[in-house]
Image (cartoon, rainbow, N blue to C red; front, side, top):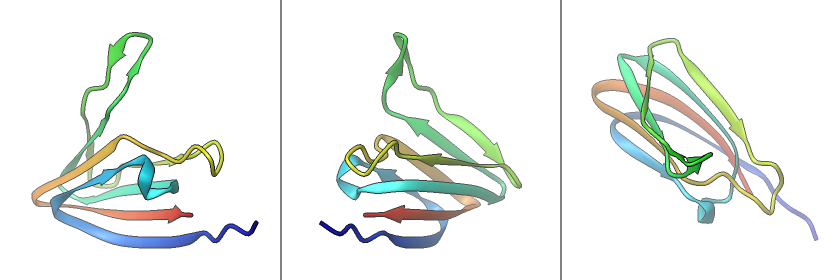
Length: 92
C-alpha cells in the first residue's frame, strides 16, 4: 500500500488552527513571525495538564509523529489580532 505525503503551508493571522488526529498530520513546523502566538496541547503528562505557552517573533518549533499510524493530535495554535505565524505541515 502506497502512502502519499503532501505539504501544506499557511500564514496564520488573527485566527486559530486546531490539529487533530483525523487531520493525519505527520510533521508540523510553526514559526512566529509577528508579535506573539499561543500554543496549547490537549493532554496530560505525568498527571500534569497542558498549559498554553507563548512564542515571540523569531521563535518556533517542530514536532513529528512517531509513525503514520499515530499522527499528531491535540495542538491548538492561536495568532490573535496583529500577530502571525508561518505554518508548514506534512500530512498523509
